[in-house]
Image 1 (cartoon, rainbow, N blue to C red):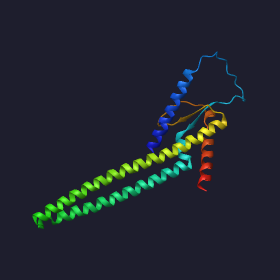
Image 2: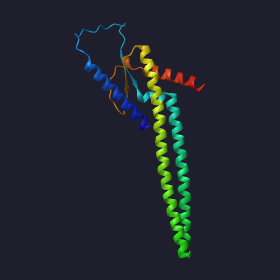
Image 3: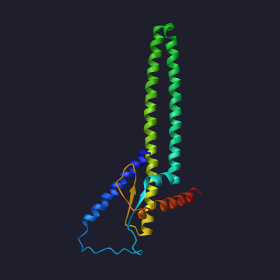
Image 4: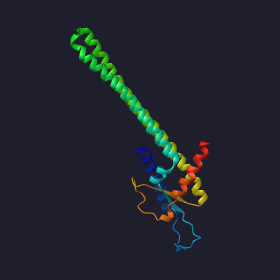
Length: 195
């Protein structure tokens, strides 16, 4: 899931930079003391990424699917490697009794099979990584799409992402943490989509 964490980290960084640039580009106005009342609503909130990814059902489903595909790919590759190793062992067992031309032909064939196996492993790994990145991107897109509407509905101007792995937000008052509400709504929306 490192890829997902990396994507979220990059987006969080972009949001922070954009927010900083926006704040820097605003013309200076006279600062007024902020009245603290229950009517004032926070315009900046954050979501705990670690909690979100561990409790968002769609993210958990994608993670499980990718883990299953990874295990299947490893099993497939393991079976192919074992079959190749059996062929090599059989050749080594019979090499002394084989004529020189048959030995040479078998060695060349085994070398081609080894190269093909290595190519298969590299292709399978690259394909799996691409699929994992695509799925992580889908999770990210769903979250971003939801958070845009959520922020608009709640009147939030900035939604930050907090993660222990990449703590760009070092502190946030618990009153600004909207993770639980976001998870509940995301899971509700996902359940409707599944039906």
